[in-house]
Image (cartoon, rainbow, N blue to C red; front, side, top):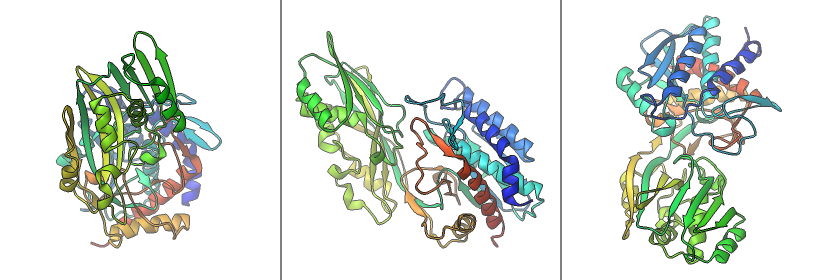
Length: 449
């Protein structure tokens, strides 16, 4: 059967399977180990779907699971994730009830990354049904905490090792040859003037809304309003015993902070310019302000041809006498963790930046057989030979498992609102993903060792 005919014949069931996975609110939590009861349930559902496609499955202690087909000593790994970031506010429909409208599917995870998982399942289903002569084994590996650290895949690797070739359908076509390094931190300001402050959904999402309670008379309200009006940032102010301010931003993925409007940054800057005399606010203005590329810290000096630095403040909260802010940084592919750690030694007085972890950049030569095989699959299906592979700020499973790059599932020019409200998937491109992954598996299968 031709690939196009197979996809059309199976398309309704593809959507049913995706809808099933989207129905699980698989945000990591601690109600059941290792990553929450919903992640256990979505993994069980995904394994059942893979079994129905003819794959031999295994549950890897609920950290991950996989479905396998083929034969041989070498292993092709396809690595996708079933966990999602919090839905947040602003949806036009239930984020965990996939809906279709105007040729698009809407729901949390339809693009990141449950859609990529389902597309990969159907690519394998096609090859199995066609009796494709596998020279290698192919394993679709599904993890359950990519959004909160990828411990799932490191655990899988500790049990089953790395594949010989592979990709993760969790970025852009025609492929990602390099991923920036990552530095995560927690800013703590002790004994600040904030009575309370809360905002943000996750460290790797640009903060969409922040609410703070401040003492009366601690800042110039008119200057505060004027600053936010000039920046065209929404806000509300309520005056009672204290002053409660709410600042509204725009969510985006932390790797692309330019696409969002960070409510935390704008709140702190508005307070700075309205004479809120606070050590944390002053520190924030000195080192970050509204910059998202580390300009105030000199990060332009380590920028390379492929990438620059991006910085995001995702979550803020008050804990005892400390105001805490999560920091998510992505740094250039030709730099390294030690350089960045040295540049981020910016403690002053009662303000501390605690390093929570760092990950070295990832880089592949685009002339390697694996990279060429994947790019050819994209070109042969789409006819697009002009779009280059790219370096990105996003961190994928490729950093946690060897011999793997991010390959799809978003196409150039798309904005599927990943990590934002109304995340969506173009259904015609969903079909195209399956065709590309079929070709990718064939091409990887034909690599001579």
